[in-house]
Image 1 (cartoon, helix red, strand yellow):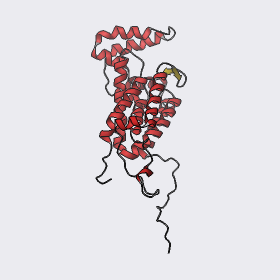
Image 2 (cartoon, helix red, strand yellow):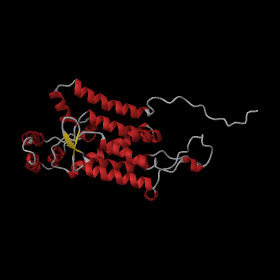
Image 3 (cartoon, one colour):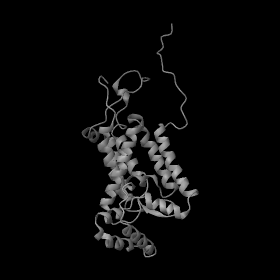
Image 4 (cartoon, helix red, strand yellow):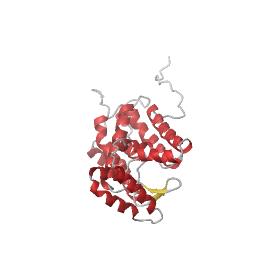
Length: 272
């Protein structure tokens, strides 16, 4: 008589072990970058950036047209070599006086280079995967979108005179990162007892006091905050040009994801 436990049948691990919604998200980012790089003319690509990127000065001038001169003056300060180009773009933005509210979300679809989109995709795979598995596709999407919008709004508030287009999905990824931080650093599920081959139970997200007692979470949050502040002070290569990291957009996304995750998290059934 065989007394060995009835272990679950092991399935073959897929090559890309990510939820479908995360794979699709990364695929969309790569597809958009490929279309811009290989199919669109330079003129059309510039128009795409103008229509979809988030430009803080556009919002500032729409709400307060009297600040148009401030925007132009801010654009010409700094490097004289590119000052004329920045001034021309600032004059275009201030003369347009169009809010284009959809850019609070669509800026996340664009990236500055292949390096930029690859870098973001790696972090999206790492932190979007646990959130999508736990919360499901639409909650994953809602968290990412909330982070994107919150990051864009904070960027506009902190740098209202900037005529530099903001692009990249980093704010949404920061929201997913913050959401994941509320449950992925919990102690191993084996502490709950039971055979090790059993599926780990769905555990509630940690409260803020519990997170503050979790050294791993505190270290993670401290490293994230410091690196974002440092990157905001320097320029990093994102392709043919260098660009400053929009640390304020990252921070806005992170705060949104951290705060909204308990509201969007799946409820634990009674008795679990």
